[in-house]
Length: 257
Image 1 (spheres, rainbow, N blue to C red):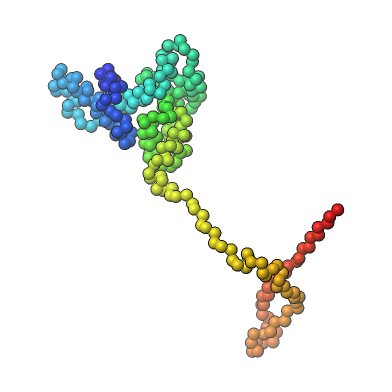
Image 2: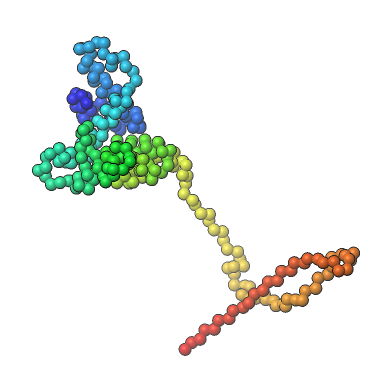
């Protein structure tokens, strides 16, 4: 990154992250700012510069803008850890260094090194970029990944983010972003509200009739069934269904010793 572009970026006078609605627009605006800085520096030297004719951004420019934002976020959130890893070991070892295996790559980005170095995974997954829990850039990253997985939820968003980034307390940070997602709130709807139970009928709450006020007793069988038609031939079989309700009273005695 150009030294002048770096100073302008760190001052924060040109690109305000709070004005970015999504990660893609933030990176594109940052890339255009860096291109303008390079163009103004080369304007007096080379009037036929390709920057003046170039319209579309390149993948290299977008990547450069992303690296600048990541380094700025890490410098703000982890001010002591990069200095320790660069050789300034006068102070005690920061807690995150041995736990996450932190190191600084060739671009000056703070990364985590786990125990999956021999796994068949991309290098960006083996050495993920360390990001803090609370930052506007982190919220834009989470929102971009959440939309990329089609609003699948916290688990899918977290697993996809960890292919490139390691966010401290990532589940907590993702939950806060998804809670504000308008589309997710529309799809999930309101929580279930149980219906209000109606009043009990009068038979259940009044004193009369008392239990066993109306009782009856009968015996079952034999049951005689009359033919439905007199024209039915003698000896012809006919299926008849009969239903009998049988109940047995159970008596319990309370004995006082």
